[in-house]
Amino acid sequence: MSETSREWPRPKIRPRKAEVRNDQIFETAARLFYEKGYAATSLQDLANAVGLQKGSLYYYIDSKKDLLFAVTDYAHTFFVELTQNAEAEGGTPLQTLERMLYQHARFAAEHFHVTAAFYNERSALSDEYQERIVATRDAYEASLRRLVRSGQEAGEIAADLDPRLAVFGVLGMLNWIHQWYRPGGELTPSEIAAALSRQAVRSLLPRTDAD
Image (cartoon, rainbow, N blue to C red):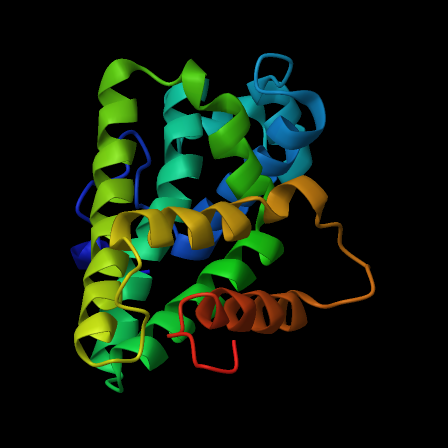
């Protein structure tokens, strides 16, 4: 993820080490929040899990609340960048939308701990942090609504659909993955993403007389 593409910087996360180290901390923290709950997870737990002394962990973060924000921002930043990348690839609105939904679903499965941390623990964030997360989320949803409207204008998406409700519907399906996905299951994240993105897109198609 590029630093320049973030609308909101990751506060208190010092980019003085490789980005992969920060991401390892975010992923591990999300897993611990998922398994133990945010309140029951200590920074010592996190330090032990990533192989650092607790004092060394403060090299990256200043507080547990800042870490929770960084975890949730990690996911939302991915979705903002996903929008930019998908639109840059070109194609019809429906093709772009399907690519975005595929990547969204794949992220939700591969990083289900991160998604769960946002939905289960966001009430622990400060009002300021919640406002920042909501602003990023709203920007992402607006980009999806634009694609739905463009698809309707192109005749690819049913004209009688409300773009706002259509987006809520498909995101509701994808954002629920963290509730049921478990690693090592019958389907891989890629297979789940392919199936759900196809299903989501089909729900948006214009009806034919045969329907």
